[in-house]
Image (cartoon, rainbow, N blue to C red):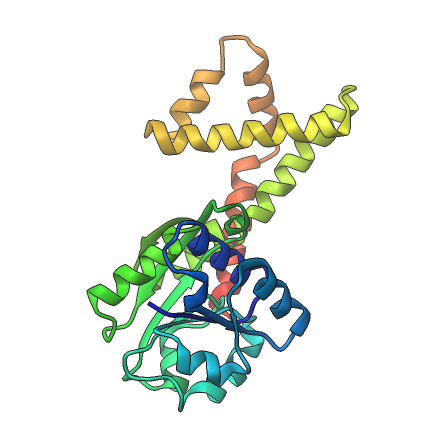
Length: 264
């Protein structure tokens, strides 16, 4: 399998690193191109991949072609490569807010198209990626795509109608979590902890808590109750969060993000 990348920014390079480290694809079977030559040269040097001469060269090379550019540049890129993309090429988009119908309208409804939404924890091989495909994509094609995206985290097939929800709860949510970690650390600093220790304690606690949800299979509410001893310290903090509308505010933020995604 030959994999092509158009775009070598943070997400594109994270995907490359993941699939190379997991030996899903050899570096010699990956070609990339980016108009930002400094970014392209960085990944070529770091991963030993093939340097493409332009977008068309990458499209001609690839069995799986990953479009890893920002949405506002997507139309120009797709129009440039539409005559080069073969019938058997699987085109994988990571562009936010760009539907399969949109991609088909430019590349053609006969093309194999997969829409995905990964997130930035791909940089540490802990991404969560949603995957959906059009009817032209075979089970074998889809298996290859899932192998790629499971190479740098977890991937799950979903219906395209849920992609805006995925953007809100997964694609954008690292920003909310970073804000939560920062706020907890600020409070710890106020209580006398050093800044470095505050970030360590807050971040490790968030990571461990997330791991408990994933590995125990218990409801988050049940896990929360396990920490809240009668008349203890934790329930006092929970009371303040409830009084300030913590859960409602988070829900409103996630829904606002989903709404923005729908209207992009």
